Length: 123
Image 1 (cartoon, rainbow, N blue to C red):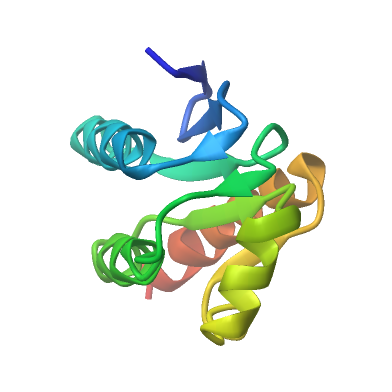
Image 2 (image 1 turned 180 degrees about the vertical axis):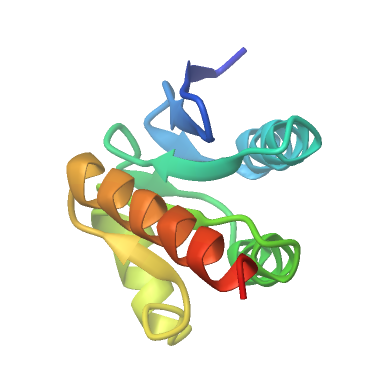
């Protein structure tokens, strides 16, 4: 496994250990995200270790973001830098995706969205 998973009550924090986001790691992330959804959890992807990108297709994040939110889960990316940050900006995904500068801020976003879902679900 090329990722560390920190399991919380309502969400999982998935942190790739590798420094390169390649197609193999992207496939592994997709499987881990799906597993979190099956366990009724939101997802934070912590890219603190990623400095290089070897895949062109990063629209997988957009697809994941859309499907997670349509199923009432949160999906937040954090600690993005280097090639990945450039590629997200180049594809104008930074205006669509939930991106937090730090892990703490990503946790805050997920927590706030959980509260919003609770409040809106009660009406």
